[in-house]
Length: 382
Image (cartoon, rainbow, N blue to C red):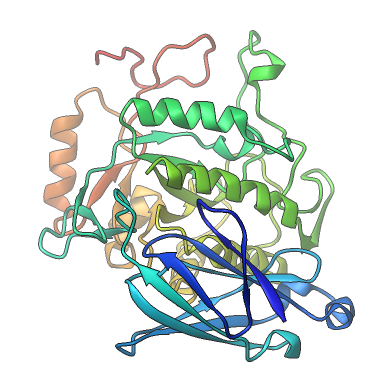
């Protein structure tokens, strides 16, 4: 069977089952497989099909990567080669038409400027670096609603590109964002115009709507549109600090640890783990608003590590959790509001040595045309 393959940054190419494809190290490759139409039609939920491709290089290094459903009869294994050289793969699947597919990749040296994923520096445990060994110092911008800027545009992401280009031009190399959020639970500025209000979007990661959800299925189109955002951030060398959940943005989530909740969680892990510009955050406001407890968050971390073949860094948007369970996270996220950040952060570092620390929310909200949130200070100079 001929299976189309998408290679990031190039046109779609096609590789026959058992054929060979030339790619570059640390570039994202979509291996696309077509399931048998009759078999797919018989399934109660095609998302639940197990598909894994085991990749192996000439030295015997193995990497088993979960695939995911991409609508219709299509399934994808998204792969990012961690090294150059010859790689082969074979698939295993609960669907016979996806099982036993083989192929090879000739992986060339990375493109200039391509540096791989973000890891903790092995020599300086409080610092980050790229897989290439280059230092990475996060200059981050919180944009929880980045997913929404073009979520209702089925064909393009012009607003997203303009925004991300501006971030890149001003030296930012990380964006803190949600997979999905619905709306704020505080009063909005009465001057806010509709074209600047991205709350209550007409999109939803599940079936139905946020007001009338169908948790029995996922909205695959939603995730295809989110792909465009993560991919463009990757092109601009900006890390997507991706928060899988958020508890204070009026999202109608399925019951915690239900079949629907786990389906969503695993799907996000399978679809986005290959992007080298990704770090995981289990949830914004992880322990706030009475939604869940430490047990649930710890369980999510463990399951994420089991399903992420690339070992992307994991944190939790909750300082109290990170402080109590520092060994469960790869870096500590703190939310400390103070105009005198230097002394505050030095205290955190002395209390929590041996881990990178990112003050993910420090209370600085610059003045803009609308009052969005009352921060600790608004002056850019401060």
